[in-house]
Amino acid sequence: MLTGRRLVVDSSRTLRSLRFSSTSATSDKYKIVVVGAGSGGLSVANQIYDRFAAAGKSLNPGDIAIIDSAEYHYYQPGWTLVGSGLRSKSTTRQPLESLIPKHLTHISENVKTFFPESSSITTTSGRSVSYDALVVATGLQTNWSGIQGLPQALVDSSSGVSSIYSYDTCDKVWNDIESLRNGNAIFTQPAGVVKCAGAPQKIMWMALDRFKRTSRADKIKVNFYTGMPTMFSVKKYSDVLDRLRQERGVGGYFQHNLISIDSPNHKATFKKADGTTVDVDYTTLHVTPPMGPLDFLKGSPIVDSAGWVSVDPATLQHTKPEYSNIFALGDCSSAPTSKTATAVIAQAPVLTENLFSVMDTGKVSTAKYDGYTSCPLLTGYGELLLAEFKYGLEPKETFPWMDQSKPNRFFYHLKKDLFPVAYWNLMVKGKWYGNKTIFRPSFSS
Ligand SMILES: Cc1cc2nc3c(=O)[nH]c(=O)nc-3n(C[C@H](O)[C@H](O)[C@H](O)COP(=O)(O)OP(=O)(O)OC[C@H]3O[C@@H](n4cnc5c(N)ncnc54)[C@H](O)[C@@H]3O)c2cc1C
Image (cartoon, rainbow, N blue to C red; front, side, top):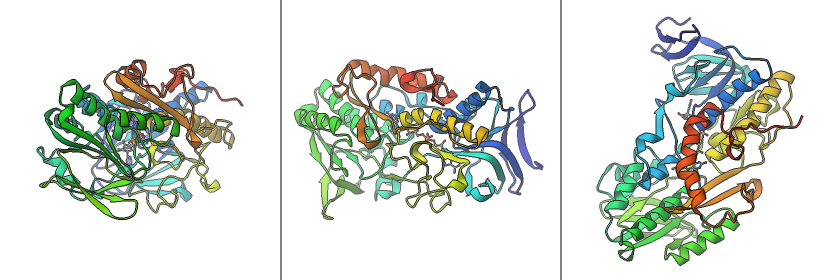
């Protein structure tokens, strides 16, 4: 029953989008429900639709529902380019509705609760939606309030405090870099999981290069304060980055975790590994906030003790046999790899194949995810170090004949020019397979 709800019905008379104004409970059933329409959700929903079609078992329009109340879909890797003055921020988002093809049903709400025993979810309006198979792709939570004084400092245009980690603040980063004339420029990275663990230092390298190119570098001291013990998790790349840091005169403060900001006095307080704190004066401060699992997932029956959706790291199917119709990918999943869009690119076809196989035969296929992820580490204008690795922090490089730990211009143009185009034109449509370009990986049977 849909009384009291605004429906948008497309020309083929399939239900395209539901926006609800009432809170009375009602129930819908879909073959496949995808929760979250970010990088992972959009890619995989399209790939699943295409996979059934390729097997001659086409789904009907509306058999797949994608649930997400967001008004916009964001190309988050683009925020580093905005902070570096290479893009305007409007190029990093598009209305979500415009990216969902007609054959997918868009439910413009958020999920509140998972009921895996009855293969159903409820939305924030109290609506119940059931499924044959579920994909969770809700991303992670950025904990802005995890650093005392950060939210206030970010909204103050004269604070000198900024972050590439949101659409709202990424352009402030470039303004702060451009307006700095002298003093102490601090770039931070928290201890623990963050999206694209290289991004906190990418923006630092870009700022440093910009200071040099505009003859300000001798008056500005650049320092990297990180909660982590090294520059990067993979030793091969970390060693190169630490060498660069020393050659370029950047201060390195490891296991220093930013805990509070006194914006009026331009002081940042860091907690060290031994539990003591240190106050540091800054002129400008770029903050990478702490991140973690989404609040609404914590305590849900589908997550592990930390709050990540508990999946087999290779098949991306839920670890509990009784929830074998549930899969997850991207930042919300427990797969022990770094949280990146490139990990999503490698995960989506594996998840698609296994979900298709479970629905078709009752069992997962041979498709396995090996933990592949990559981090295009900008080290300056016109240069980039392309870190690529898999589970176990073992390098897995696309260009083995090149030294990928050596920053070069070709990689820089991949990140700056090719990846954004591939993202908007192919990835959100489920047609981009990373280093396999538009060719879907094949999985032996
Ligand atoms: C500054 C920055 C730089 C980055 N640089 C890179 C890079 O260079 N390379 C790279 O590969 N990756 C990079 N990333 C990481 C990359 O953007 C993410 O890893 C990727 O977007 C994860 O995709 P996802 O689908 O898991 O989550 P997201 O893309 O974040 O999407 C999650 C979706 O779930 C929705 N959602 C949340 N809660 C609910 C709910 N309760 N119900 C329904 N929907 C919900 C949200 O509205 C959102 O649309 C960067 C990220 C940032 C922030």
